[in-house]
Image (cartoon, rainbow, N blue to C red; front, side, top):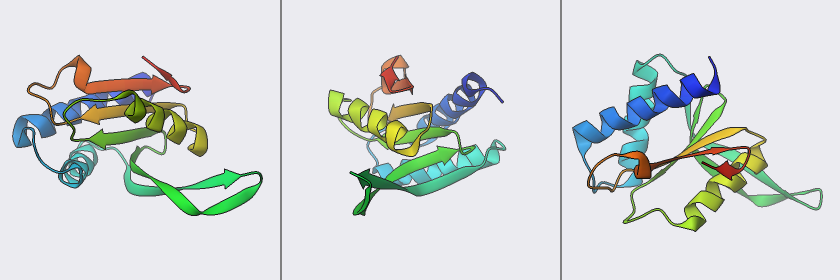
Length: 128
């Protein structure tokens, strides 16, 4: 499955979760609902995937955690915030770099309507 097809399915799952749960819940709730929906849709999903941080050849004791990793390919970073900020996009870009992955989605569930501004796609560290 291409990354475009995969991100299309992930977006569909996000719309389904949003239609059912709506805005205003904690990120953990959306994470569990997204993992369930993506699995139901036939995709493999890992939650809270640890990503080591390496500095100057040294693995730091603090690691980062990806909210969701779909098909071992797409990083999905979930938010439930008033509005997405540049720091949220930078976070996803850094996760892509640290995990050596190509594609990520940043999804904000705390929005009045789930539209294009609620889902941001990032490829090779460049926000689209």
